[in-house]
Amino acid sequence: MLTLQCRLILDKKDKKKLLELMRVQSSAIRYAYNRLLGSNNLKSLDTFNNITKELQKVFRLNAKYSQSAVIKAKSILLSYLERNQNPRKVIFGGRDLFEKLQRRNINGKQREKLKELWQERRKGSLYSVGNKRAKGNNNTRFELENNSLYLKINTGSRE
Image (cartoon, rainbow, N blue to C red; front, side, top):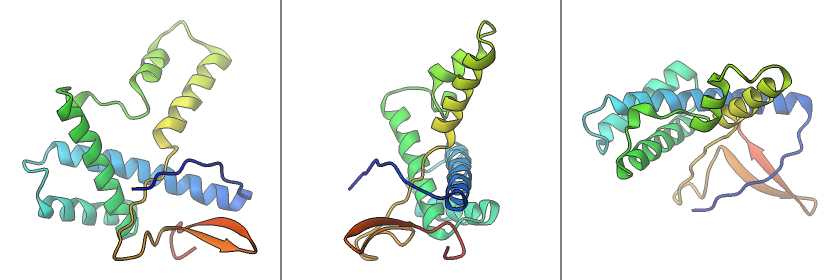
């Protein structure tokens, strides 16, 4: 597995599309997490496929982004179970930030900054899984053009 963390330089139009995709996929991950919580068998391929198809309909994500959302949700759930923590009490975006936001003594700009940080952590990632057979991931690929490395991200409708 290869994980990269990098800063992207985007124009306003591309940034808006990417932020919307990240928001939708983050919602899909939370939705899949809740479906997996109610599932009797986490390891069932039928459960995985049913949730993936449901995500495609509800969030209008392509199959690969939907599968990635289910994989991410499943990994979060299994992590909580392995640590013997209550998986029903997960707070996406971070418990510490959420609890700070609940306090009444934080107001004004400080509260807005905390809220923005919590929203960024809650919605600010894109999870996309590839496989060897497909030679990586069709939604996110690195391409070399004019001795520069570019990240191609499919934001829907082959854009």
